[in-house]
Length: 401
View: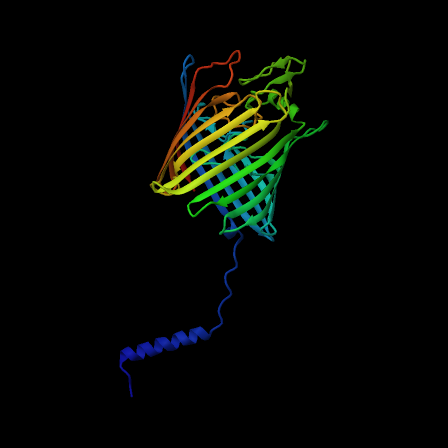
């Protein structure tokens, strides 16, 4: 019996599919090396203004471009690179200022590291890497000890003692740091050694708490100030001794004299710190965060304490999200090493205190707009320092990719 055209077509198609199914399948295409790469980066345009009674107002336009790539190498190894804009000698900022007669901008190697994670407990990183320490945060991240743009060089280790998705204790970890600060061909090298312990808790279904404490010591760190003699981008506000033995009291950005350059910091730097951060979800439909961080320089005799506390509402992680934050910082003159600390407090360095306010909005997936004002005054007055309130206002548009 001859079947109609329709059924014959269906049977023929079925027979063809069955025949193809019996043919040997080609091997899966081999993964290319570039398929394993993870690319990331961002571009930011900033308007930054300085307003202080008794001094001329200043507004400058700045840009920042960062581009990074990481690649798994197998057997637990990962390599990473990041390039970023930056002005020569500035270790706490990747911004470059516009307005220098269209001069080309520098693009530098910001990170280059090799990480090894043989299991879920141990991770070791070597090279030049991102700031690895835990710190409490909200809409305004704490930068009490170190500037967020700092890329240390040396070694970092993480030992995860406990990690869980359920229960009260979610994570317990120890972190170790050995940073090469200044290598000397004829003398003793300068290192930073230390670490911290971190515990993260789930208080209930909507509340989480993180606490951390640590210690950072700068070995032979007193001679680090000699780097300022050749690099005017380094911020030095700690007290120093010159080559002749004269004391320069600090409290404001210092400049070495050509005839009597800097020789050593007056104080040592042995930083003891502790911090805590609390997050509560479902508050006004978003997250409420509160945090505090404290530091004391055990190597200094006076002016040695710093505090950073903040509260924020919102996250600005998804399109349409917003976040608002308020923080208060007080960094006494010898509390931290000024060359590595947050460079946007006042005119940079230590001996500053005051509030920081920030508002962020994410109008699209990859775009974030932010306004941030640092309202700073000196902790103590020193000769040559304008003690009036200084506003450092930053208006940012950032594109992430």
